[in-house]
Image (cartoon, rainbow, N blue to C red; front, side, top):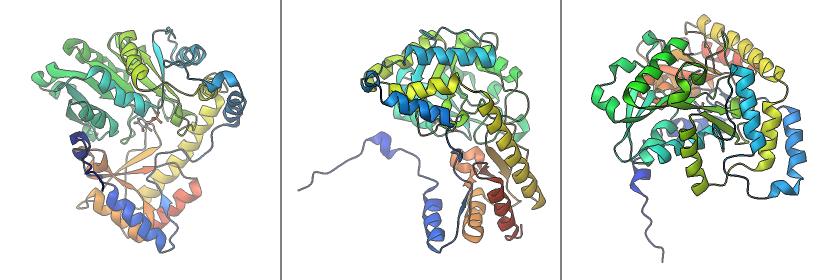
Amino acid sequence: MSISIKKAERIKQLPPYLFAEIDRLKREVAARGIDLINLGIGDPDTPTPPHIVARLREAAGNPANHRYPDYEGLPSFRQAAAGWMRERYGLTVDPATEVVSLIGSKEGIANMAVAFVDHDDVVLVPDPGYPVYHIGTSFNGGVTYRLPLRRENGFLPDLAAVPTDVARRAKLLWLNYPNNPTSAVAPRAFFAEAIRFATRHNVIICHDAAYAEIYFGDRPPSLLELPGGREVGIEFHSLSKTFNMTGWRVVFAVGHPDVIAGLGKVKTNVDSGVFQAVQEAGIAALSGDYAIVERLRAMYRERREVLVRGLADLGLVCDPPAGTFYVWVPMPRGQTAAGFAMRCLTEAGVVVTPGNGFGEAGEGYIRLTLCSPTERLREAVERLRGLGL
Ligand SMILES: *Cc1c(COP(=O)(O)O)cnc(C)c1O
């Protein structure tokens, strides 16, 4: 006889999965034989560059890599990460104390709360935003305080509007620029303001820079290059989107040594780091041909023109993305994000993501991704034309 299985409260308290209905409809539409155009997933459609793959093949054959890795990352991987920060931002960081390797930013984001959030501590989280900031907080007994990102503020949080008692209880402030899902980029002046806020209230800034290399104007700043940035926080640099390596799970965090040490402490206790052969492939990425990153930027830029123009032609006018591979589109008057997404799927076979799936403040928007070739984006626009918006 089976025992009765009761899930932990933290699992029961997970927010309802907003995309479940879309997933069900997706299967239903696909079963009707309709060729779905998926502009819902944020995962690069082009392959990992061949020299990175070759490096993994070679490293996988080396028995020295068949053992448990150092939990904090190979010294050579951390050096390559430091080299990247020097090359990109002109920063000198100590690979031994200011860099840690992670099994994806997602892992690091979730583990930040393990390392730094006690029961009832507040974590400041952008809304709309990457769901893991809140999930990590709630799994560890913290309290999420949402910072709405609104178009009239350039999709930047209004830190001055955070009540003093909330700021006083806050442990972490999550930021993410270039931003998923709004595609906004934050100016240096905003980071300067965030650093002042963090210093005044003793809050750790965690900057998720997953899209640091996907931008269409000036290069977005690093938190760490601003005066005082290194004293108040860390930054997550993912190889996932930069080098088409989402499946590889190799990333680094860089910044304040005490914060890096805290994250490292969690990792010694719950995982044993990244497979060394994958770290070697990461070294090949970080210290290899930078032209690759430029080519990807150019590819997304072309797709962005096609989609943004095509949508405008349908009357769906949006701000062209400043960065990331997302397009954040306000809804026609009177339509909810979910209702509109449903119509795109069932009537046009185009998958889009309703903005409120990233938080309440995302209502009124849908998110489309640029992770499909231009022909597919053009076809998606033609199909949406059929909806007669
Ligand atoms: C894709 C994404 C990540 C996850 O990156 P990994 O390094 O692959 O875990 C983190 N943050 C944001 C905002 C993302 O969109």
